Amino acid sequence: MMLTRRIFTALMMSAAAMTPVAMTSPAAAQELTKITFVSPSASAINSFSIHTAIGEGFFADEGLEVTAQAINGSGAVLQALSSGQADFGRPGPGPLLAARGRGVDAVFIYNHAAKNNFGLVVPDASPVQTPADLKGTVIGTGSADGAEVGFARNVMTGSGLVDGTDYSFLTVGDGGPASAGLRSGEISAYSAAAADAAVLNHRGVAVRDITPPEFARFFGNGLVTMGDTIRDNPELVEKFVRAVYRGHMFALDEANREAVLDDMAAANPQESEDREFANALLEAIIDRSIPNDLSHGYGYQPPEVWVEWQDVQIAGGELAEPLPDLTAAYTNEFTFKVNGSAN
Image (cartoon, rainbow, N blue to C red; front, top):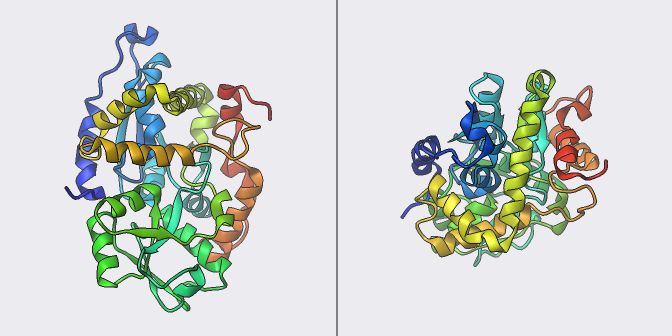
């Protein structure tokens, strides 16, 4: 069965809308606050903390009823947030910085992919061994403005290659189109999230990651809301983050694995048709959510990596100059509150 963002979207939207609120929670007797969460892909597993928090009633415990919707790419997520069509989303750090450069007051509030969630992959039989070997080639991406584009550009810049001069990007989508592009040679490499790479391998297109290890520090997509939401309703943000944190911790416990897989299947049945594959994918995504340094707890965003992300955006042309206040792009306030770590 083809696993694509297009097919998943309708399923995820309808399934999330029908997710029952746990009637055993203390908040069930009162009216719940309805909020909308948007994801840049239809994979429920990529947003496992959200869907675990929905399925296990952690949002309901906070008095929240969350509807999860899938749209295409981080740019679309940020547009939905800025237009008021969504309350929270999961874009990448690069697109967020680019949006802030255009005056969009979006703020990172929880580091969901503490380790880099992307990899530059090539067919297993390809002669390419390093990013430098991709000079003169075309690199495929799932979307035109998603976090995978900024990440791949970052990797290529680290090898001294310039976008548009030494290589080019081609938006091919994910799943079947990405498989076809690699098989035909239309693209020589693909900037893939962990889920994308797993799907490619599952579809019989064996790929290997050529990303240099030093790029692991560039954390991936995280949870975001608008600045006015933080200023006007910090209690809502804290409740949302607390439920996400509980979902994250629940999913980390191996004893809860079957329950988590059930939550994923409820959110996106097609993605979980092959439960063994779903479990392998969940394992990979969970691993990337665990910080290398746990001294600040889960969800923490290292300020020094934000500086590096900004440098990448400037080098790639997404930002003309440094932001007036980079620290306004993120906050660790809520993660410190919910996980009890010291700042």
